[in-house]
Amino acid sequence: MYLTLEQSSLELDATNAVLDTYDPPQIVAWAAHEFGDALVMSSSFGAESAAIIHLATRVLPDIRIILIDTGYLFRETHGFMEDLRQRFDLNVWTYRTPNDPFAYLKDANECDPNVRSNVDACCAVNKNEPFNRAMRQLKPKAWLRGIRRNQSESRSDKQPVEWSNRYNCYAISPLLNWTRRDIHAYMKQHDLPYHPLYAQGYTSIGCNPLTCTRPIQLGEDPRAGRWSGTQKLECGMHLENGAGI
Image (cartoon, rainbow, N blue to C red):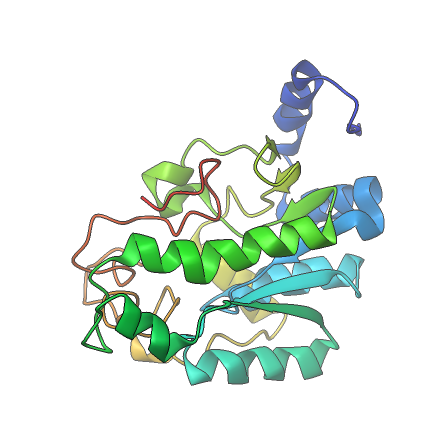
């Protein structure tokens, strides 16, 4: 059962009803069959990113992988990306913020390099703008992403395939129904590495200032270390209005 870009939302609903019964490898295979080289994926090269990268490249070895370099990524993230790129011969397309990281902090009156007082503004200009630009330039028909329903309330109602007016393409989320246990089992089965900071308690990894990423404490939610001390739950990439929440 395959949808096309011309088909209606009613048929998209029916397709989602089927895809929701598929496991992630089947969803990725369906996406590769349907969209081929017009399929891209995004990756933060975060804690468990090797899982979806492995799933995608087993079917489309040369899939374009979009990495957004905000200017504040951990040096371990850059090293992890290079390790995976060499191991799997990845086709990584890096898009960077137009801002000089230090100049941005000065202009935004962010005097402490370890803290962001306005995390929404920082994500908007240093993460969302480069991703918007990537999607405009690459013009994919579909985009693979690694979000899961159990990660946050804002992701709990996501569907395997959704139309994005923001990016003018389909957003495909093959991992929606997997848990951290499922991810761990897949990574163990295929001998996939975690991000090097994972062992230090960084279970969700974004930028390196204190309010953006910290290790979690015993009993905390795995995403509690992101934007700690704020009400923010999303950078905005996965939201149609683009605003972080």
